[in-house]
Image (cartoon, rainbow, N blue to C red; front, side, top):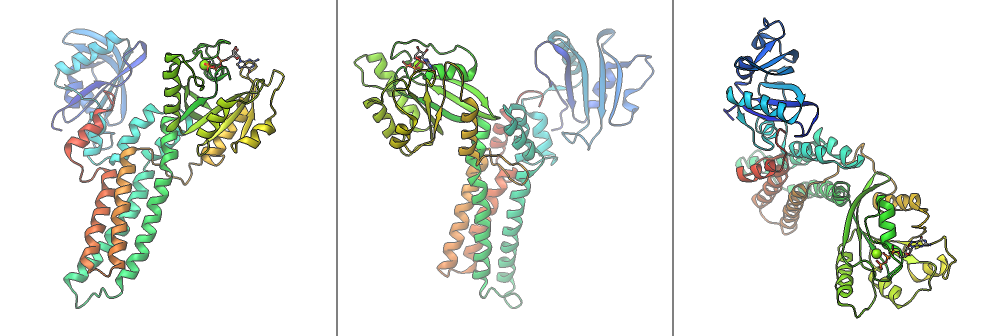
Length: 457
Ligand SMILES: Nc1nc2c(ncn2[C@@H]2O[C@H](COP(=O)(O)OP(=O)(O)OP(=O)(O)O)[C@@H](O)[C@H]2O)c(=O)[nH]1
Ligand SMILES: [Mg+2]
């Protein structure tokens, strides 16, 4: 952290402006070596913090680019260090030349995520907030953006800190009582602690319960389109993505491979997966496709079961319905533009899942489908005011560890174990929760987390 780092913070493609970011002890020296104001008089090192200046970047006597320079002095900066941002023209060559000049004059190239890592190591943000930075950048829909913005503003930090404060209070109490038994008594303390642990467990469980929603917000609901051949699965996929990506023909058994596409429906991200129509067949290639379809359906978050309403139900439909018994599923009663061979009621009698009439050809029924998905996964709405969404697998694992440590505390209380037993497991729970905030994490793990960031962030 003694070095001064620099990187291009914007995308490496032609754009209006490009930003080169410099952070570290020597940031002001570096910029003063290469910046000249328009009149040539202004000393950039002497300007007040958090001001913007117009001028040129020079490599010795050569003008490189016309720029705006932002001067931000420690500690009120993202990294907590002296920081300079150079707004130059957003050409790939121009950005590279400015960066090169910065590097020649005392800065080192930053590693991916190094700015955010410094913010974390300098105590400007905790690890959950640092991780939220990357989530904000990668957010693909409104809800993902909102939940990661909340996390960036400290929602996870606050929830975890609250639980940890309660745990440490009890650890401290037990430890002092053991040190000073004459003045502090632990008689009957098991009961008080039991109640507290119960409450902490509930708080953690609540966070965990929201984690599957969190995962779906972030990664999209894994939605598998299933049905017998010719039901209109590929037509549905094409309609939803607004593109003729999947091959559609009136030949049963057209689709063989799995096809994946991301879409946003009513603000919710879906990872849509088209599959081969399910039937028993002699064709070896098709058999493999059917096998893949069955396999993919196993760990789906949602199944869209497409039924051809112009054909009677047959043994293939029966077979599929059996697969769907304990699944989250929506039945799409397709081809409503044709004469029906089965009614919606007949389907409702054979399967307990909701049925929505659609026509993949005439593109009807999609609004209903969006609403139904929202109802199934988010009880009709996603609220962000007081809800903390755990979207990160690392956080989820740490919460689960904390929960099992608290369960051990409960066991010890029930079995009437000595008090020092309580504090060992309480301490483990405290530390597991601390991992979310980045406490007691090994350097390797911290490096690994930040290595997933983009350069310049
Ligand atoms: N009239 C009408 N035809 C449709 C509709 N949806 C699909 N089709 C037709 O049904 C036939 C089969 O459609 P696909 O989308 O290929 O069906 P699939 O379920 O993907 O079939 P496989 O890949 O063979 O399993 C094509 O001729 C489509 O044009 C619809 O809503 N109305
Ligand atoms: Mg198909």
